[in-house]
Structures are given as C-alpha cells and as structure tokens.
Length: 130
Image (cartoon, rainbow, N blue to C red):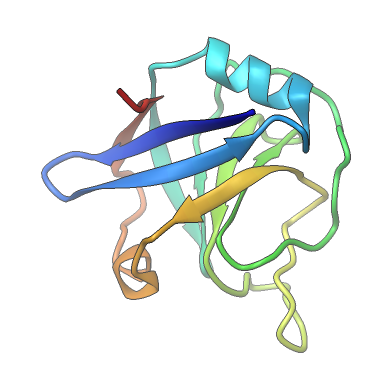
C-alpha cells in the first residue's frame, strides 16, 4: 500500500512523500503511528535528516547506498532522511548514507535546488496527506 505523507516546511513549501509499505512495513507503520511529527532539520551534503524521532525500529532491509530522492529511516540516529544528491562520504556518483538506512519511499515532484536551500535548524512537520 502507498501512503502519502506531507513534509510541511512552514512559510516555505510542502513536499509530498510516497511511502511504500512493501519495502519496510515495520518502519513505515512506526513512522505513520508517530504522525503528526514536528522535528528539526539537519543538512549533510545533499541529505536532509531530522532530529531524533519517536520511531524506534532496527534495520529492516537496510541499504548502505540509496537512490536519488529516496526517503529513509536511519536506525542509528532514529531520524528520517531525504536524499537528493551526494553526501560528504559519497564517491563516484553514488549516494551514501552515514550508515545503512531503511528505505521507505520517495520524494515526489520537488525541485532539487529548493532542497539545497533548506537550512539547518528549520522546524518541520510530517503529517498524513488529507
């Protein structure tokens, strides 16, 4: 089943995320159960990741590399991650998280240049799409 979640960047923009519970069902269920969720954003290269969330799931189909526009849960940091390009440890065009992540879905129709402009510390809200 596909779930649409909105990432609301106050006074800036809303970003739709499509989560597919065939990929990592336990992770997605825990994330959906924690919505709405208000967290801070951190920037690491071309990755946005949240402050610690109440989602507490271990590795589930974890991957050491992700694809462009993947949305993932980082078990080590209990954070939601949005990947829109290389991180500081990426090599040769790959997108490498700090450590393996549970991919849970994709960012839908968002301008990569917009994501590059998001600043550390921005407070955002994840909520179910109505």
